[in-house]
Length: 207
Length: 207
Image 1 (spheres, rainbow over the protein chains, first blue to last red):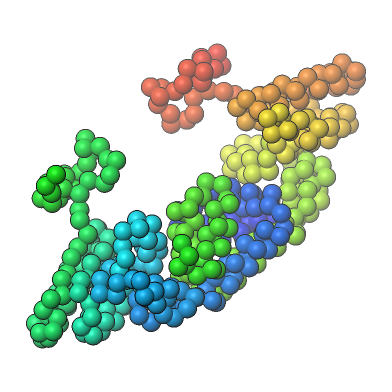
Image 2 (cartoon, rainbow over the protein chains, first blue to last red; image 1 turned 90 degrees about the horizontal axis):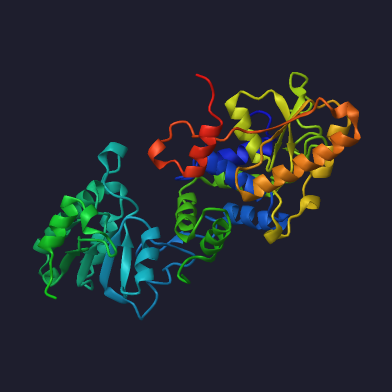
C-alpha cells in the first residue's frame, strides 16, 4: 500500500495493534479520523499519550486509579469485609454496572497461564493473602473468568487461603465463594452448551 | 463510572466517537492501551495529532496524498485514459488490492444524499467533467456503492457525461461502464437475496 501517505500507513499499523482490530477496521478508523476536526484529533492524541502518566495502582486492591487508595477502597460506604477477586481492572466496570455489589475488589492482574509463563508469583495473590491476614475480611468472592485459566487461578487461590486458615484460627469465619454458573439471562435453552446447562441444573434454586 | 481516572474516562469517550466502536469496545481498547509501553503510546498519539497535517488532496483525482499530484496520478505506468469513479479514498485501497486495475481514480468524496443535504454540488462531479473535457479519457467506470445513494450518484454522473458528449463530438468514443453486479465469490445461493440473484442471472456470461 505504498501509494498511501506515510502518516496514514503508520496510523493504520498503530490501530492494528489493538485487540480485535484487523487491517480493514484499522483502515476504516484511520480514514474516519481524516474527517474529524483537528482539535478533536489533538485531544484524542494527547489523551493517549498522557493515559498512563496520571494513573497509579491502588496499594490496597491494585485497581488502576488516579489516587492511592482508589475511590472504591477509600469510600467508607463500601463494605471492606467482602472482597471480590478479579483478573483485570476492566472487570470492575462490569460489576459496578450491576449496582449489586457494595464490597471492595482485589485485582490479580491476570490468571495463571503456564503456556504464557504466568505463574502465581506474577499475580497479586501474595498481596491478597496479606489483606486476608489482617482478619477484617469475611468473604472472598472468587470472580476469575469461567475458563481454564480462571478456574485454575480460583482453585489455587482457594488452596492458599485454606492453608492460611488452617494456620490462623482468627480466620475461621472467612467464607470463600465463587460466582454462580448457569444460563445467561435472555439465552435460549436450545443453544445452551451441555456444561452450562449441567451447572444450571446443579445450581437450581427454589422459585 | 466516576470511580475511573479522568484520563481513562475521556479516552473511552474518544474511542466511542469512532465508527463501530461502542462503550464496551471503547473500554476494552483503553484498558488495553494501559499495558502498552509509553513510547508506543507517544507514537500512536502523535500519529493521530499529525494525521491530517501532512495530507493534501490530489488536484487531479482528489485522493488523499502526501504529494500533489498523488503517487497514482503521477505514475506513468498507470493508464490515465481509464478512470474509476469512487465515493471515498478508502475504496482505492480495495481496488489496489485486487491488482487488476491499472487505470487512475476520481474520488467524489461522498454520494448524493438529499436526506443529509448532500447534493451534486458538494461532490467532485464538476471536477470530473473538467477532466473529461480534456478529451484524454476513454472509459469512465462508475464504481459508486451498489446502494440507493450510490446508484443515484451513478445515474446523475452518467447523465451529466451524456450531456457533455452531446455537446462535444471529440468525446464520442468515451465509454461509461458500471461494476458488475452478481453473486459475491464464496457465497451460498441459498442465502442470496432476490435482487442480487436477478442481477447475476441478467449478467450471466458464457463459460
